[in-house]
Image 1 (cartoon, helix red, strand yellow):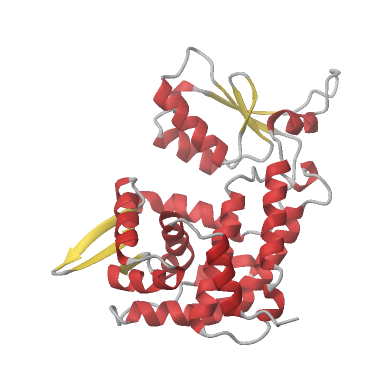
Image 2: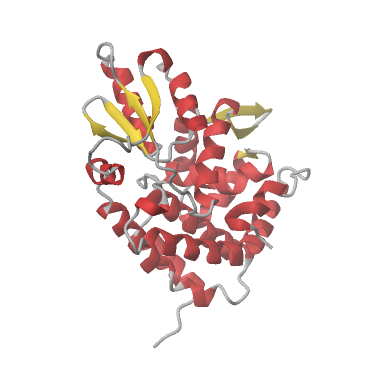
Amino acid sequence: MKQLTSNAWIDHFLASDPPRSKSLVMTIFGDAIAPHGGSIWLGSLIELLAPFGVNDRLLRTSVFRLAQEGWLLASRDRRRSAYAILPQALGRFERAYRRIYAPLEVHWDGTWTLLLLAGGPLDAPLRAALRKELLWEGYALVSPGVYGHPAGDPEALQDILVRLDAADKLFVCSATALAQVAGRPLPELVGEGWDLSGVSAGYQQFIDQFAPLLAIAQAPLAPEQAFVIRTLLIHAYRRVQLHDPMLPVELLPDPWPGARAYELARTLYRALAAAAEEHVVAVMRREDAQTALAEASFFQRFGGLE
């Protein structure tokens, strides 16, 4: 059997499952640009995206739309353009990527965070925006008018309610079972709120796609190859995680493929990180010689990078 090479794997992945350009730009900003200050000249961004088949026109359209949506900030210096993560969006970037790189060790303390939509209906735009944000954060509509999560992040929830101007329109509480009252066990609420079959299948597909790279990543890769594979790795992993409610380990099916997917992503990322960083820094320094090396928090990803 012909040995799989990194270039062959990349070509097959891009042909069979090509990433959308706008989403790929978001991945690269969060994974590669944010650790270097969060700003990049357009020429350098074009060079970083070229190996993925994203041409100049597609890239310009993508960054323009991301700027319109409040993710990126555009600036100009004479004839050059630069893009940076908008300060107001930085917190959302950090939470999203902290979730990607953090170990799967959230445990359940027996409580649920509940949001009660009481006191009158919300207007349609706010209801739709709130639903989108809460679902992304892992909450489920566990009962009519009640969103819940067994391991809700208070900081993230506060950000959502403040940003949507919805803090005075809902009741937010922490709930536990009453030991002296008979009732269904609270862990069964997971089955009422989430169908994890799609997430499980997504993780299994991720494992099937990236497991062949374990042998390839043992040998040194060219910096650009390492960057392309690392980017596709995080892009695919992030895509599954967007649909993962990130439930505590005690409330997940056993075995849970998300645990295997995380270990695979961790192993590959650690093998690729150094060479990929060489490429990122070299490209960014072609237009900005003062580009800093990655900040210290970068080296804490996936439990620590060498």
